[in-house]
Length: 485
Image (cartoon, rainbow, N blue to C red; front, side, top):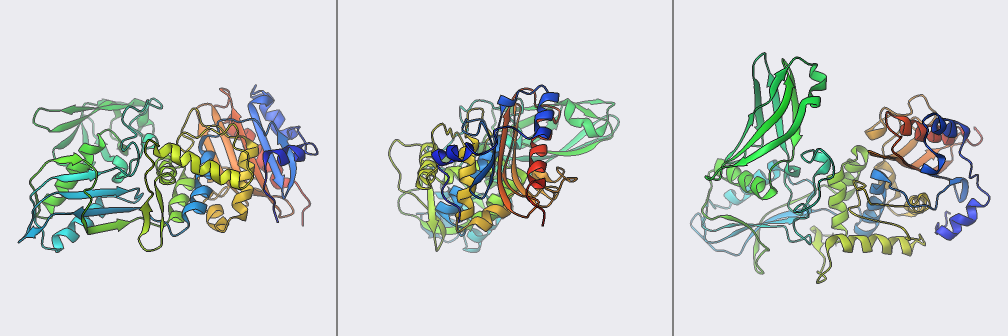
């Protein structure tokens, strides 16, 4: 039985563990001019530390931070937890007219899409309602603040990319427009989906002679123009190769515009009429449920974001820790609000309480959004090792472990370690930022014993695959260690 791994206990382990990095790892660091003190590493076999190199020092973990969010969510919310979206109203119905406002209330539903919205609206139509003689109220109030995206600093040079989408409690289609770009010798044709009322996408891209495979080299963030009439034009800029066809998803519209116009286009297509304006507002106190949607269960969601390293989904689950609790009947329900406390602060507290309850020291831990898409998040290899050992003791250890990418098989490890004995035997979350590479998870050694492996490098010299090669060498070393059966 594994014991809780408090930092003090780990430090005792490290007295007997090797602090010297394995020779293949040290050589690759030397060849890349990466100093050894830019790396921290921890390898545990059971309760014994085989390797501990600067393991107590907090570093930026990049997307390996998703593992913390994952196990805390599974333990706190349970595997049956589901986010939900509701259509509600307190207004009466006369004939086919709803005599008042319709509320679309968000509940951190990770699967809320245009198709889901259409099914919900069709359910309203099936109840005989054709005309909404009132406003559409969009309720994002589950998170505090409701719009974390407003005023947020730009993370990198691609603010329109899906990786940078900041979630809210009522996000549909992840706020993405799917662009289909096709060029001939003289023009670029563009089609966008979903169809949004009053939104047009046009191209001002310059056609060039270039390889279609390198089309992204000429991409520039689109420009969004709003006319006095309320119509919106998304203007594509940059260059595009001749005789090329590509698709790309962009986050360029304000989410209020996106959801409002998607709702109106869908409701109109179903034969409905909406009289009033669309506003952001909390749900009135007395409303009845007209239609609902619940997401897939939590194990499906965490598997999605760990395998592909989906920042938006992970951030949604992190915020859920500060806003929702499980409900055995409907999947989830809102926590009682605490005046003045943000959802992020409450989620942060939930994580720290979970760690402390398992004797994992949270000193030096920095949480910004729980996804690792952050310049300031910090965790030590010792703390991550404690989290990974605690995960193995959890009731939901199978769900946690099955969410991790498998070396040389799937997810972000699909093309890594194929020639290593770690192939098909290592389950690791990867992490990558401009100056960060990391891995954390489980590797079976030559004797078939499962080892906890955590490694992070914070350096500007990790580019061109050099940092990744160092981490792969460490994983390979673990997989070859021990006594073969």
